[in-house]
Amino acid sequence: MNGSGAGTPRRIGVLRQIREDLDTVVARDPSRPRRRDALLHSPWHGLALHRIAHRLHLRGHRFAAGLLTLAGRLLSGMELHPGARIGRRAFIDHGFGVVIGETARVGDDVTLYHGVTLGSRGWSRAPEPGVRRHPVVGDDVLIGVGASVLGPVTIASGNRIRAHSLILRDLPAPGRAIRIDPVREAAHPARSSA
Image (cartoon, rainbow, N blue to C red; front, side, top):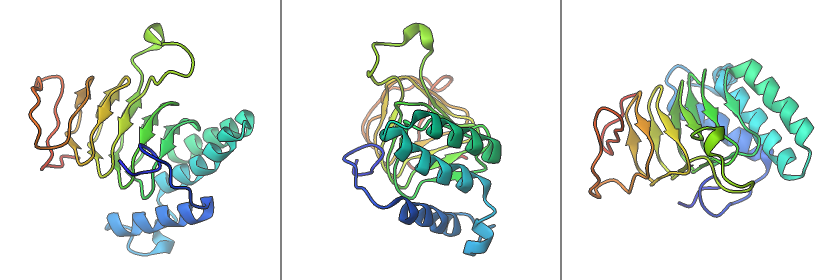
């Protein structure tokens, strides 16, 4: 995992990162073939505000970061905690209902569809402060509509998670054997089902 979200951070300027996210919308959304069209992609607004809020959060400006997070939620319908690290070239399609928790780490070139949750398993299981409560998602992962990845699990790079899946344990790299209960948890490396 090389991404700024899941692995070792590769810092680039926030404006360059926001432009890169806009170009990612143009590249991955056929309904937004030009930059000016991509400017109307509401998940991009939420992600752009998250990029700024995250930098403020890291510098200890928690209230300002929270205000930007609230504005992003109102504009895009997504709740991206300012503490969450989201890698480069992230693409959130129809982002309404996406939730990414504080200690989540998302790699580069990840695609999330609406209703995806990268969350904890609840306050009653919350460990000590500073301990990871949310997922780590590797590079080039696709997470389908309405999927929930909960707890301090790790999703290896290259995985494809089916729509409406519930993931409660680590998913190894595609091609490695893992037993998955098809009713509760599913991941298919070769298939996207957003």
